[in-house]
Length: 478
Ligand code: NAD
Image (cartoon, rainbow, N blue to C red; front, side):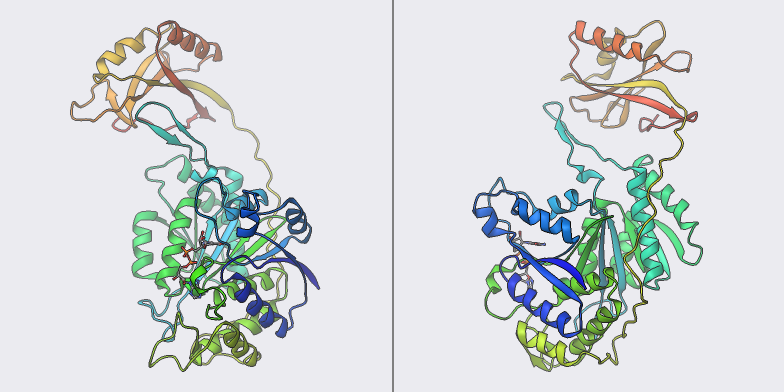
């Protein structure tokens, strides 16, 4: 018996939750349920996070959370409960299977069966943003080795547990050599530990195009947060089944399972909504808590129901569908088919397994880290980089001098192009004249000189070499 937390949410949430619970209980799920309140009512009662403190205590105690969609009220001040939950509970992996149900649900891709594994905690979603000049704002893209190791290892463990043959990695490391480069590098390292599973890497632009065109070429795809956010919606949509997909958010301690759609307020209370998305989330939950036989029974009965043409309004199609049902009618149809298997769609078989447990991250031996230069970012409203170079050269010291200026990454001094458009945000790179290392005091000297000369420095970035290898990007065109 596993104790889980549920939240019925808003809009169609309560109906699809009742339908989902009735199906999994009829299939023999060994669960005890604590229900909490989240969403619109909580928001409107003045709690801008959409969830009360006591509810967090229950979620953290039970560690397994099945959540129906919630309505985020329009207007400012409300925080997305999904984002907060992911971050608070350290749910580092987002898993979204996207499978077509051809010929029963319309799709251009009859043989699509992919699983998107999205990193869920870092990347541009750390939400560290600043305005630095009149014209320029920035968002920090943070990628960590532990973050990469966890998500990539999860993808390979998932592939092994679910009998998948290949894990593909999507990054843009031809451009972001440090951040996406680290993700790709860790992928290569970990892939080598799973010789039984094929691996490949695609640059995300052509990879995404290929996925949208020929999804059957892929199996499990792992990627950093932002790419995963975008492509998991694309994948669900082209499978033809946004309303049928579920997702799992997995952490070391806790996990949350849900449908990918929203609360569809216009359909609420009419016994019309399709409970399949939340049911798919619940099936992932049953696998996660080790009740794989129940998960298998439910999934096969659900596939048989779809195959028998028993459809809710959203997927009902004259000529293909046989019977139009509401939310509760659909649940009854699935329950009536428990124990049966689909004949045309592929029946599933889940190996007996427990939730994927990753080894604890062990910090690597520190590298030898040398300070080899300094980027000073300045707000300067001028236009001619040669003029800025003259201003910045006043900061040169006997050991360190200005070596390059870039604007939005492209080198504009020395030997820039007149055609290059420049904003008021400049990066001025200082390097030791002898190519050696820099003393931290030199940074202070450069910055105090900048203050004395009234130069508007907005930030600095230290340039390091790790184990003798430069670990920063060059200027474009350098
Ligand atoms: P939505 O997913 O609720 O609805 C989009 C369309 O799909 C609508 O036409 C709706 O009727 C239909 N639809 C969705 N689920 C369906 C189902 N199970 N059966 C049949 N039809 C279904 O998206 P929206 O209208 O943009 O958002 C509504 C609310 O949901 C918003 O407040 C939004 O913030 C919230 N939302 C919540 C979550 C979540 O809790 N995870 C996710 C997305 C949106």
